[in-house]
Structures are given as structure tokens and as C-alpha cells.
Length: 394
Image (cartoon, rainbow, N blue to C red; front, side, top):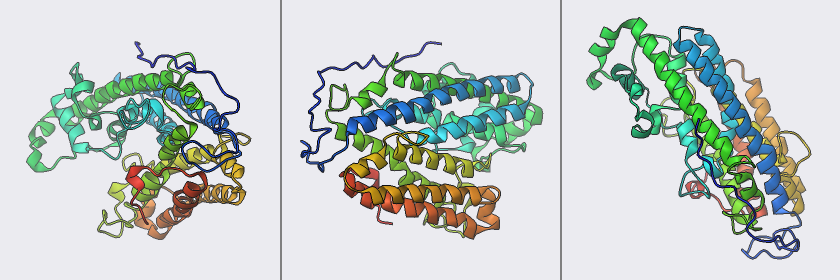
């Protein structure tokens, strides 16, 4: 497989061990004086959080493509479903880490938009998927360049793998019902499998590009992040890089709290009923709870600088500016939010109907965490709130 990678990002200037990026003096960009080393922190996040995540997702995406190909050939669909769950768990960590090649092109340094190629949520359209099934559009050679991102990716795979009935998701005025009926149940299932196999292969290719973008021996965005302010090809200062990592971390506020929890739980004006289970992130596989947990696990890794203890992430930075109590509070609230997810019986989708207070308790737990993120964390490290969240006052 041909993989297009970023050019290797070697250091472009000599390091200065006395740089104000790592001393206690006032920063050139006006940020708060610090007694922590931003580059140590960025290195930990790049090497111990992001790089292992993209490596593992590359592996899981390959397994998903293989399992889906077996399903297409008449094999076990449940194995493909299981492979999707495994891949999605890892991807949900990457959702919190949209820095560099995964991030939107033109909005983040080194952004190539690979995230949307893999997972377009919340931009999803089940009817569009069924229209592609009717016209077999997934067979077209230019399908992945001609179509919008909501025609492929992990969200499309969820629908193809986990919708079990023979119906379609389109309103009658769309006009596919007669063609759909004429296909028959057997042909529809065969087309779902073929479509899924092509999409899974595309996801595998994108996962390879994403991994190569971070690999030290390939695109090496790992070095670009770690050497911010010290010759990085993308970041003039370490604070610039830190702000982009924080913008990725802010997913916990904008997407986890406000979109994944508030809307389906009826705590947003975008749901006008008591609850809207159909607006949960993962309604077909009923995987929303697992997705939430992995988002929180990745947030915890950013605090720690690793998926294990002992590295230097945002908690290390807070301790460096005399905010150990805040670091401890963030850690405690993250653990509490993870525990709340684990304690929810059954699926999040089921709780939205059967036990709405329990479903809403997850929003309460995550909000306790995000209230600290968008106020005290921002202030303590002089971080730039992403534009999307600048007017968020809830």
C-alpha cells in the first residue's frame, strides 16, 4: 500500500538550554512564568500518549478490514462487529488527541483532516448510506474522493454492521423504497457487506497515513510537537503547541459534555423531548458508554502525560506553577467521571429510556470536570480557549 507521509521533521535550529520556554522567567508570548519545562511535557504527550494510540489504531484498523472482508465473503459477521468495537475503543482515545495530521487542515499546524476520513461523527446520514446501497455507489473507483465524509468511515461501518432489519432509513419522498424492495433481503445484506468491506479498507489506509505522520522514522510529527520553540517546523514557541494540545483536550467540553451527553439526555435545546436516544453517538451498536469511557481515559492520559502513572502532562505543568491542588482536583474528578460511566448499568442508550436520572448523572460527573478545565486550568496555564468554545458559559 502506498502511504503518503510528511517529510521527516528534523530540528531546524540549535537548542538553547537556557530558553525561556523552560525557565522561570516571563515568556516572550506573555504567558505566565513557569518552573516546568513545556518541551518535557509535550514530549511525554507526543511519545507516551499520541504515538502509541495511532500505532494501536493502525493495528485495530487492519484487523477490522480483515474481519469485514471475511464477512463479505460469507463469513462471520459477529467477528467483524467485534473488530469494529475494538477499533472504536482505540479511536475514541484519538478523538481527544486531534493534533497534527488528524486535525483539520488550515486550522491546526500540520493538519491533514485525517480524523474526518476515519470518523465523521456527528456528521452522519443513514439515509445517504442506504442510497449508496441502492445504487452500489461504493463500487465506483472515485467513491472516496467524490463523496462527502459521511458516506464512509467508522460511523458508516457501524450502521452497516449493526443494523439488523431489512428496512432503510430514508423518508418515502426520497424515492428509494421500490428499488429497495426489489433488491430483497439477501441482496441488501450482501451489499451492506460489500460496502462495509470497501469502507473498512479505506479506514485501514487512513490509519496507516495517520500512524506514518507520527512515526519518528516517517513523518515524525512526534518531533514537531516535542521540539516546539526549539526548531520545530510548525510551532514557533512551546506555548503555541501547548495551546493546540489544549484545543484538542477541549473536546471533553464541546463534544463529550455538550454533544454526547447533554443532547441525548434532554439537557439541550436540540432535544425537545425528555430524552433523545436516537441522538446518542452510537445508536446502532449501542456503544456510546464505551466511547465516553475511552474519551475520559485519554483525558486522564493528557493529565498524566501517559496512559500510566509517572510521566509529565498537564498535571506536571500545574504543579510547576504552584497549582498542585488543581491538579489533584482534575485527577479526582476524572476518576469520578470514569467511575460514573462504569457504574451505569447496561447501555447508555437503554438508560436514556429506562433510567434517565442515571443517564443524566454522567453529564453531572463530566460537568464537574469540565468546569475546572474551562476556568481554572485555562487561567493557571494561560491557555487559549478554542474559538468554538469561547462563548460557552454553561
